Length: 392
Image 1 (cartoon, rainbow, N blue to C red):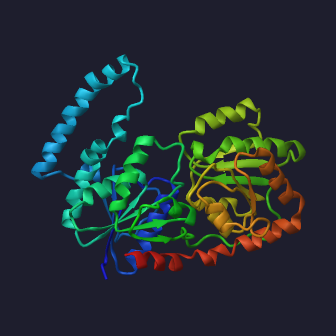
Image 2 (cartoon, helix red, strand yellow):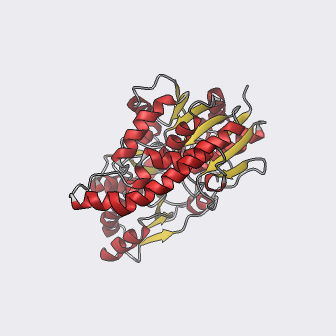
Image 3 (cartoon, helix red, strand yellow):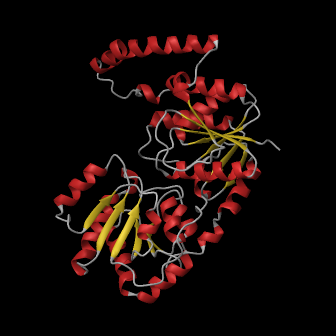
């Protein structure tokens, strides 16, 4: 059995894919594997990693081959030509539908695949896992001809409105090179019909040491914790809460996380004059201890793979109201009105009604809490990492 595992990802800041890598890396290291994490840039790591896990940064790795140096010089020259002549010419011709520089195959190859390739030449015996679309592309470019076993890991809905069309074209062209693929849901796997490799559907693991299910009087708080981007559709959650708050003014909405939409969301709250009842909190490593006694968890994403925040909220026994979003993760884990409430995407009225039902029906809330917490065993780290070992 190959005992070397390498994970490739953009960075290890707070996020679902990053958390999964940290869990896998630590457990595989504990099982005797040599584990490396290779990132694009030297940025802060949000999750604890075992001392035995090694970390590398592509922007600090030298490119020493003659081929690599030539490509890098060509890349530098072409980037200047593109900026000074090519793009201005296209704009003069009113041709605006061209890929941005960082959405081209050449960019991924010159910027990241070359240092990745230097790493793979030294670590040919590893199984290389790519997480997130840009790192997957660069990894598969880098691995060509090396003999390294490559596995791409889909961590989101493959049909994403926020993903540039050119990157998706590159992805669909290059992903068939892989030796295996891992998906979070069957809906994700069904998208990739051209793959001829081994595939597996492996849910995310539940992190260890989560607090036990709370059984006392819950706070009048509705919580969400996530990356604050458009995919999460937090404005919809705010709209639904606004409806609820008119009937239950003592309830608060508390949202934990960081992201590019935070300032816009704060402005949205001010527009609605909800500053005294809707609060944003920073990313917190002890988030589960802070929210375990909340009234419920509300999740309003437009699309997802399998949301870590959703399954963690279920694991600590929070009654959950979740959108049945594209990607299939919510409907894979939630049986409506058994271990959570599923509502249509984009429907603020439905989210409001789901939250209201949990508040008004204490028996339902307690039943959802008990059933939801059973995912703790279903998605235990040992069970999930056993499935990843089969891929290795």
